[in-house]
Amino acid sequence: MKATVSRKAHFNAAHRLFKEGWSDEKNLQVFGKCSNPNYHGHNYELVVSVTGEIDQETGFVVDLKILKDIIKQEVEEPLDHKNLNIEVDAFKTLNPTTENIAVYIYEKLKPHLKPELDLEVTLFETPRNFVTYSGE
Image (cartoon, rainbow, N blue to C red; front, side, top):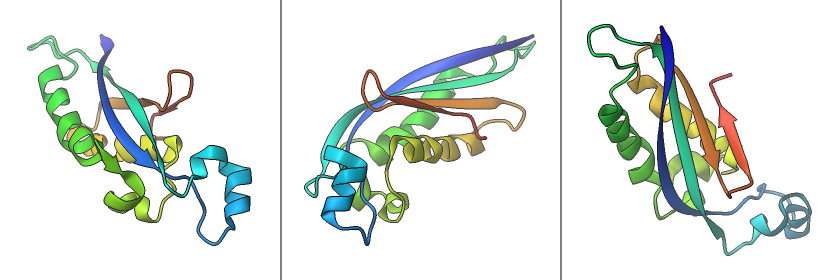
C-alpha cells in the first residue's frame, strides 16, 4: 500500500529577481517590482510531500519527526531571515525565482530520503502564487 505524507514549514527571506547584464529598465520590464535593487521579502510557505510504500513494521512511509528535522536543517536554517541573493551561495549566480528555490529545496531534501520514496515540494511565495516540483 502506498501513501503520501506531508509536512508544512515556513521561512522568511528577501530576494531580488534580476539578470546580470540587463539594464534596470529591462529587469523592471521582465521582473516588475520584484527587481527592486533594494530587495524585497516574502513569507514563504512550504509543503513537503513524500510518497511511498507503508512500512509494514512501523506503519510509516517516512517518520515525520525525521522529516521535520531534515527540513529544519536543510531549508529553514539556511534560508530563514536571509537575503537569498547575498547569503545563499546557490543564488549568487542563480536567479532566486520561486521555481529555482523549489528546485533548490528538492535537491537539498532528496538525498536524505530512501531512493524508493517520491518527493514533491510545493513552495508558496504568496497565498496565490506557488510552484510544485517533483524532480522532473
